[in-house]
Image: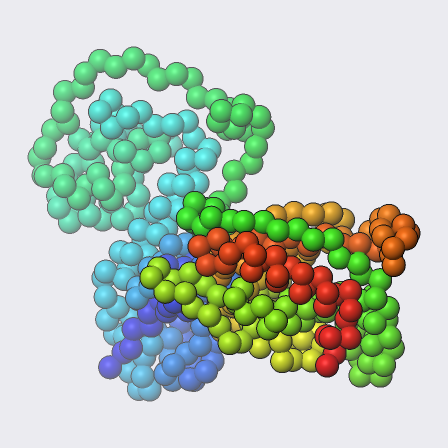
Length: 430
């Protein structure tokens, strides 16, 4: 009996995804564990493995298709000895329809970017023939539905871009229905050139949001609208930390390990949370969850958008282990290969823009966490050293705290603990 291969839920929040690439084709044999496709989820691009063995009978959803709902049949797998054509024919029609709808939506979105806005439905004329070969503009899915219902497409008004007939236009139409008499309507205003951008009236190029960017937009909007942020900033001397880093790197050179400043800051944040556990919390409605482990989510800029791989139990890990894990996770993040357990969770976040020369910034909390630490660049500044004015390497660090879960005094204690650990860094190696 043929087995339908369905769009998987590769993360707890995934409702739909993009079938980025097929790595198999009809006729290919697969075994359990073989990589069949790459799927772009709401977090990253992930590999989709075969669960059963058999032969790929058909591909129902083409690669590059966006908005494929979880559970949609994307391919059919034939068991040993089964006829491939019969297995392909066993694919549920609804799976094909969903795939066609996703492709149709993609075409419509592309047309909307390049064509003038269509008139409102009330003023839209019945579908007119296109300039090419006298054909009516209609999507493949809408044409198939119209044929099944015996509809005359020339009597149907298209609500898609440039009067194109889409699925919604034919679903409720009845055979033999004539177009309603059109009321006179003023001619639409001339469309702006495609390169002119809305209210800003400046040249632009439209770029469709990928799934990761959509999630970033939704979560950050949620964070700023629902979380009362409080910001606390301290200036931290880095000279002792930089000296310790240099000494540690000399001793670790034979092992091929090179600590970054960020590695030490991850450890300092985790140790500060150990000293001030009231900041290692999250607000959960009627409850406050206080965590007994310091899982640090570290912001990494990836081509698809910002993502935060996690150094779990960072407070109890050594600097060399943190450094090794961070390099591996950052590489996977940039390649879009992170697994869900590598970026889901975390009890606090760290965002470092110092490498770009940013002096100081306020970061947005990553819900449901209750704090994020933003660190800027270390720079030579006048600083009081042992009661005398001198020059020191100083970094500004700003903590953003969820004021529902963390009081200002507790946040200030955390920032003080972080400052002390960085300025007296031997506490990071014990």
